[in-house]
Length: 405
Image (tube, rainbow, N blue to C red; front, side, top):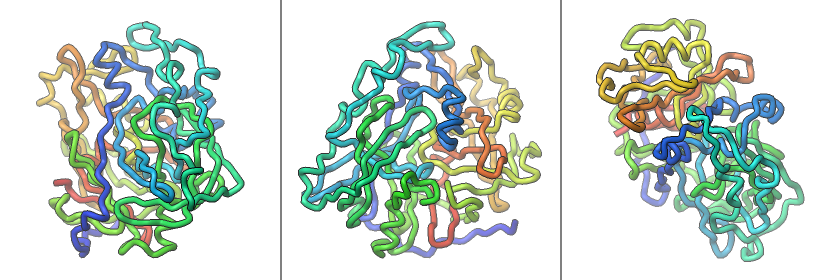
């Protein structure tokens, strides 16, 4: 594929079009600090059917074991503020509502096994009401709300929810969208989180109940200067942002490399190579299917390559988890993926995570899942996206990457 590298000739996004993002502390990190390692969950299950998820025994509390970035939208008249996860790996928009009653405690065992310590801990989401930990949207307090007369059920690979659909005004980053269809949670079977909903930014093809995505409504109403959304995920705790309709040139230090979307469902692209310390592995000789997902914390690697990758780092294995002494971090290899003929490096500082007792963990996980065409699935999550400013272009169905500032 011919390399396409262009500088997007757009003005720096105004403050009104940006939404600051908070970096949440993951349940996995919190438990790890207490010396407990939570069970592994295949990150690729997020993109599979409920039947496939059930076959793998995914548990609801594992949905948010990892980290995440979230920001604020407003719903209704007068506006009610809601913290949401902006997710390029899903397409529905829903928020917690006053009608939500968590069913988690009646559906799950009161205790779950935790490895590698062979301990049992009380299930976090069984002990708490997942939809009762934040302020809920109340449609009765909004003069612009109308019921749509239908509902949907969502599964996120390790958790789910049911929602009734309605229409209301949404405000995000200074943009106002009228008559947006939004899901109001009725049941919520996930771990409690600091955010109270999800804004799905993938394609409408995978939207449950044919709910129009927020981006589709924005495009239809002509409220965007360009039909794009862009993410800057800071390496630190602050400074992350999402921009609608424009890019923020101050957040990148290189030109944007564009690559076409290969399946208009998720933001799926093609990788032509994967290198370890500048040595091509050959894993993507025929091309690799990669989903670019702001809602996946790590870098997901097909199972058949994962062990080889870990062996190249000199990692130690214990109960299915890979560790390394933090003192050896300087000897770890730099990884790289080739997209549209350009090599995007992933240094050890990006994929290594601080652990306990002088040991570090890897922000890379194996996945045994495939994309819609049956190809092994790679997921370029936040480990990759913290290194590269990412732009999602619905007008030309392409994804752009530039070195993050």
